[in-house]
Amino acid sequence: EKFTKYYEDELTQLLTEYGKIDCLWLDSNWLRPENGYDLHMDTLAPKLKKMQPGMMIVDRGDHRTEDYWTPENSIITDSVTNVPWESVITLGGHWGYTTWDKPKDEHWVIDSLLNNISNGGNLHLGVGPKGDGTIPEPVIDVLKKVGKFNKMNEEGIFTTRPVAPYQNDYAYFTQSKDGKKVYAFVDNELDSFELPKELKDYKNAFQVDGKKLEVNGNIIDVKGYKSEDFKVRMIILEK
Image (tube, rainbow, N blue to C red; front, side, top):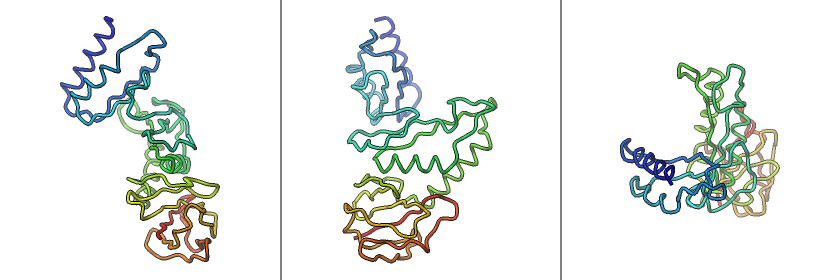
């Protein structure tokens, strides 16, 4: 009980003396009732949220009070759910900086991002700065390339929603918030692809620059539309 009181006092100080807090991340996943550590989060969480209206809580110890899920270092391919979630993944092999670590390349990051957003999730990348606070150049290079991809295709990435079939062997799918557009991130090696049966009503297809693509029945011709830098290109589908 002494520790529980200490825990509540520490959180109260953090949430009342340091301005606006958007997210409270409680990473103590071993502090669980089944392990003999009941921090009474079922009653504490509402108190904390009153201190910071609008704040989200990630509680990896007591999932009863968690606002969204955070699977760690894993890409999940079947997590379309009403619960918000994001994969929490290291860009390299460690959470902190090491001299021998190498970051995953931009293609891995983009594929992971598209997998997650097509399933209604998000991607949280962990980057370890060096001792002087700077980010290693190889990491910056990867992040700039991912940023370029996101900027080019932001309409199909940000504030989107999942849409069936979510993903298949050659594409990832998202939809606009109002459901009027579907975004297909299609394998760059394909010259054409077939619309999934769930999207058969979307008969108009466009490149990111607005140029209309040829559609024959359920087959979309994309042989003249390739990405120079990435392994997928985005096609905009409308009814």
